Image 1: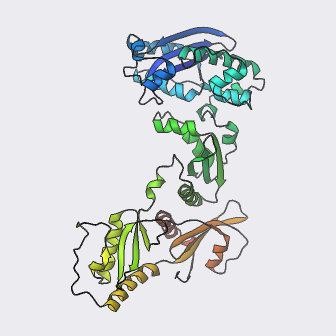
Image 2 (image 1 turned 60 degrees about the vertical axis):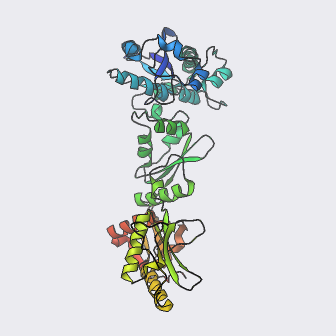
Image 3 (image 1 turned 120 degrees about the vertical axis):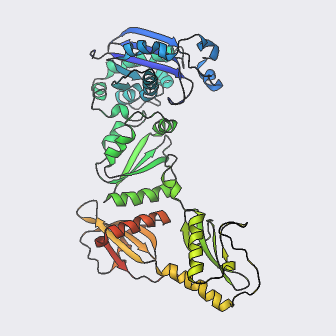
Length: 460
């Protein structure tokens, strides 16, 4: 390793992520910590069309790169310039992801320490209005003669690095480039102080974008460790790169147990619908079992799509799941299928064609339907789950009422519980859904010693 030598890199590309886009221009400037000692720049044939918006931004078109070398032809030169030096760029993870991907594609292995001049500038010159390269150059009076071209941006970044090294009396840059530092893996706009203050405890963490909107909610057994995992590795998918660019701030909430964190995560995702939470969104129920009485006086059961403001007896993730339950109820309680609607309009696997002859006695029929409804609601018990809290002075608690998740919270550990219903006084209400109840039911079955059961009259 050359002592404190930096390879300042800027690239232009055909798009925003390394997995689908290619490099069209690269400039590498070698800096010894005081001054520039070498410089190399070239156009690169990306072997694909350059989109018009990219041409409008950079001025690089297909004709300009047609006779340029492909990256494989310059890979050895690039590696020679980068090897043993600290990789520097403005928003370093973007440039690093492209160069590493192209070198790997050329069959060359390369690892290095990184330094992001966005993050370095935030540390050495905090409080500036903007840390984009263009705005930093205007604020700090750094010449930027060819913006959005690799050479022009690299030259400006080299001057910026020289000044940051000169101004860095606290040694922040030296800390940033240590091998065990998490700093360079963090998103460019995320203050390291926010990462460092994360606790190593169970809980929920929130990522915010530039305007303070939550874009991701996650749960963890160890918040700090889990957050660090988001920013490690070398994933080059568009989703990850967009995710990293969006993160400007982090907050967290410590929970008593990992299970409490899981429930809070589910509730928060349902409430906030963050942009980058995809996995749990698919667990939202889409269909419901409805119970209603027609003008004729006959009671009906039906499976249909959930609608706001329309109460249903039960929720389902799929039409198939709802239809199966309704078929089972109709069979068990001898309900005439003509009074069961199965969620579709035309004849199909679950449709039984109806006629209006020989209708059942209305009182007997309605009694059967009501019995089926009683069967469903009678299986909805009320119970609480009490577990360890965030400290020895408290315990976590969950309350389920009539088969629905009511809420969760914390109670003082010295409170004596004489009946389960007391738990309800200590919880914060949350919306229930089928997925949350599946989690709670599974947890209660696995840990029966933490469950306190109660009899609460069913809701009218």
